[in-house]
Length: 426
Length: 138
Image (cartoon, rainbow over all chains, first blue to last red):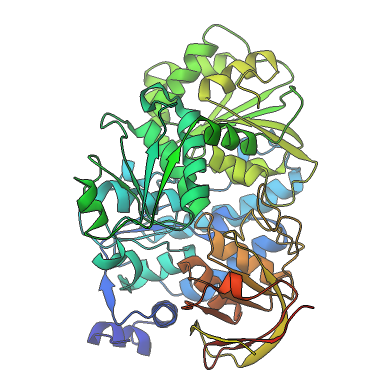
């Protein structure tokens, strides 16, 4: 790879050990992917392993070892940076069935990591939705390690960001650059397949869960080909966008998609395809949605033990929908409800009275943590409004230990009151 | 026998092993059990198959940005594939291979997941970026 003088200096170790290691990683990544040079970034979103990736036991030790060499003499980052959620709010770890010994280990590893990154100047956003804090710009190069945020910045802002991981984004924040490859290059940004809705469905009748199911159905068709969506209402809001983007980001491995008439690089279908012929066209209908609901529901019985909401963090609309169901009522004694949002939105939910309604009903409402990862310790049936969360709850080695019900935010809130699944059953 | 040319993420010599092939995208964080090497994702074509010690042949990675850590944990628990052969290289998969020094070759002109069959004996030459089927599963 061609490096400029500043990048050569970093690689030679003139700026210290961590910066040298960071440059070595980026050069190795760039060479492995055929990049000819680096490109400067103006922002990074970090995913430190010791903050988020099961920070206890032997993997807690591995997490630290992964980044130790990179971070030990770093005093500052070259670009503004935000950060992913913490693994777990320690005050509610017991509610999620973590034993005291593990909570103590988490306290050590997670708190050390938080302190380190905050001292480095990382903005303590602790969310997978950093666009609430940092808005991307068209054509701006950034480095993001969080699948929905990568997809959001490329798609909604037209910023340029590859599917970076925690190590690469940290290296990018230390050096201020990433290899110029993938969707950083204009020739890799055009749409490849067309997605449209069948006549038996109507976007304007979708609830939040339908957007997830539609997104899963789309992912299973388009796989790793960049989709161009037709007919999505231009009035689509942040909540439905979150549901649509979160699922496809995990299920397809994509960094970028287009929505005609909505996203900046897709004013028309022709512009989204950039003169290329589409490789395929998929029509998503009622049956596809039904199959997606079926895949996302692994439970067969109707009893619910946990309602876990907030992957990614709940929006104000979702919090409001919960309160519409829970107001003046009590959550069933067999059910534990945990709802998670960002620090800023929690403050607003408190101002608007939503927080009181959820807590008065017996729910737990907190912020800054990753309910998708932290929720993987529980035994029983989990209900959630997120197929991204289902991917994690039904994954790992859950086996017979954990089953999942998936439905809308309101379905989940209604199930909290009865202890039985109140959403659709396939 | 058949030789396929791709791009190697780093030069690590030549290794040989039995292929595990899937036509579905593979996720290492949550989609694979890092304690056992088994693919556990609901609805995955290769669900229940174990990648530990195999030459894993797949179209591309998927999953969250934690993919690299998932692969790293898999390797630290000794359950990683012996090598990865992919149609195209997701950034997080390439990073996982580099961090754990797993041989990985990707980017073939041929449709690699249909050119190799589970059980084939495959040689991966990371210096030349070549993958060779040395013995077909009979």
